[in-house]
Length: 119
Image (cartoon, rainbow, N blue to C red; front, top):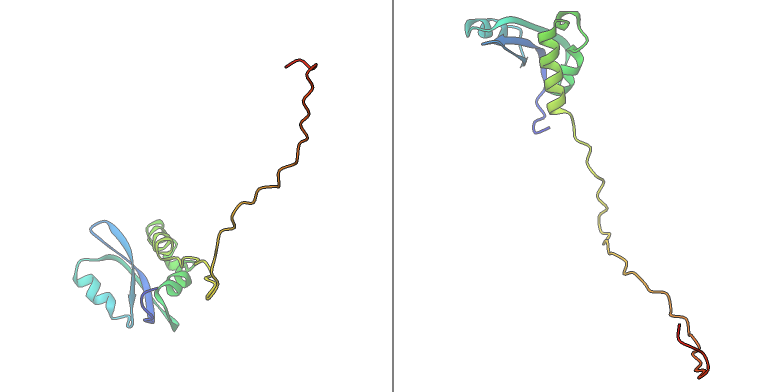
């Protein structure tokens, strides 16, 4: 994640028909959201401060967010912000491609017989 900010209040709200997840440090954020026209504002205060991703994971199973709009917004956020698995980088190790080796050619004994026909 790009930020290490911690929040105690997590939830969802709808504005112009679009439901999104919300983060805050105080439940008074409800008044600000409602003042700006948000509907279905649901915010809960958790017992400890968490990162955005961990806080949204924490509210995912709560009864307050069981409605389909909240669940869709939560699932979309978690999918978009899921930590990407990075490849472990080996430091100081140079990777070189091995050159293909040819098997040594077998020696073939050639004899010339004048009496043998060509096939």
